[in-house]
Length: 209
Image (cartoon, rainbow, N blue to C red):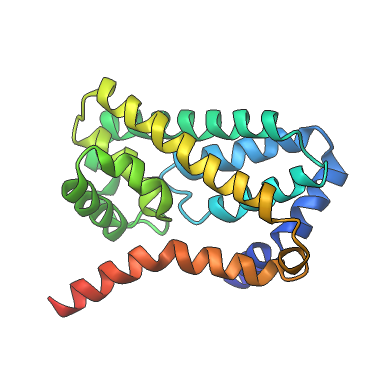
């Protein structure tokens, strides 16, 4: 039931977000900020629809529902603060969090992020922004690994700005095109598929090994 509801939210995120705006008005900025912060800042929230939400909010900004500049600034701040909080959680708590298997805290997710981090080094903080699940665990792994905070914060800022800019501006400039607006659920499917391609490729490589 939860998976079905989550999928429905993903596919109709433009309508759901429009409902949030009509219901909560200016508070919608705060709700968006909170969702993006939780996806990037709380290691138990890797399932939140960051990519889709940014694209949809950009599209709604083009229709006048949001101020695009304010939206961009808040989403960049949420992404930056979220990763920073996640880093310090990993720094102080470390692998103790994963000593026991939890429903939301999967060791396999941590291991996936660790491999991604080891392969790409500091650039992983930037690249991970564009990979669901990994983007939630990468800053945590950086904290566990005691990555230099000055170095981390630089990659964090670049990655957060690049991620938010790409998806919000894509929604802003392309989300109102008739063929996109009338087939928004299919666009969401494409975004989700593109987002999980890196994970799928890594899974295939592991299977071959």
